[in-house]
Image 1 (cartoon, rainbow, N blue to C red):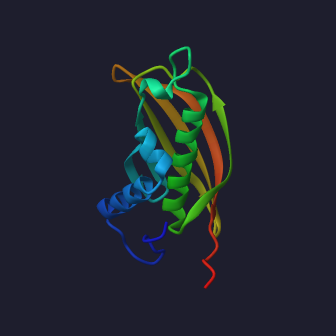
Image 2 (cartoon, rainbow, N blue to C red):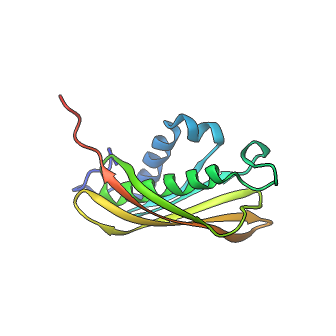
Length: 150
């Protein structure tokens, strides 16, 4: 992630503040109300209050919203591991149950980090009455962005 250089120590508070500024700069994330709750080297937690506008006709979170949560959490975890600007190169998701509740929580971690990519996993939970239930599992490859051309 830009601003979290490879060779410098960054406090947990500074890393989280930087991550929150990146999330705030994403218009779609701001539109739906996503919140970055944790960010540390190779790990991220993203949360989202589930408003009626984010649900499908049966009352649970739309699959695209669950997928967004996994994708963005994977990217934050990979970016925090690689400590350079990144994008998602690919990911897959398995929906294991409908996401019913008032909030989604996505927790991702880098399981392998190389020089130009990180392979990350993510669990997405639906929270209802304080109880978390797993609703999706994802895995993705997060790739470094090339240096900007001058």
